[in-house]
Length: 290
Ligand code: ATP
Image (tube, rainbow, N blue to C red):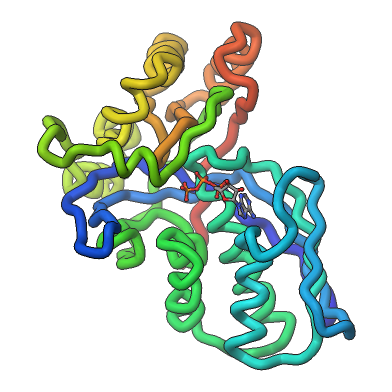
């Protein structure tokens, strides 16, 4: 095999709780993660030249060691010592720096892809451990589906699949640094937390409305305070039929859960028309058969 096509899907956080701060500066988190069907596309090729080459439709995205997809290829080469090179074409569709884990998912796809392309026979556990060197969310992006993430996000428990639904994603046109959001979070100021266990039970029962009403992200207290548009989009989605809506990850993307495709599409169209967000998507959740 010399070439592979892969989809690197985005994630949303159904719940996000920060439970502590560690000595090394990382935060302990507890989050329910869900993969969605909005994806970047990757074409990965084995080449004879002993280099890593990366091209993308997004011209301003770094194409060198600063890109997580590049880093993933380099890590695989360094760890498993294959001499052939790798060419990656990355078609970005997931908004960048959005709280949707796009970079982590690209890295995960490269790890999984090179394992197949070079017939390395690395187990999923091993790939996930390797992925952790690239970022806390990379192991989850290898696992995918509905999962509980603890530790810094790397300790994963697969959950029953979330009930089927429609998801509207809206990324307002603002830039937010994940590091800054965590830096500005004062643990002692967290007044409300998600009921993670209750949401897990709602997922197990297949109760979409109960899942939607349990959506909660503690980071919204930081990002939402600085950017009114986040609260405005949430309100707008709820007014237009969403069963619940919150910010994903460290933001600024807001998502709403719908049980009706037409309502989801209408809400998305209205969001675009009213210029509340430039990047708006209607998608579904993704779960693999396990
Ligand atoms: P998270 O939710 O895990 O914090 P995010 O969705 O907020 O991630 P990304 O889209 O992964 O953020 O990008 C964050 C930063 O990483 C950007 O500033 C971008 O320049 C850099 N980056 C490196 N590689 C990639 C990639 N393949 N795709 C997108 N961004 C990348």
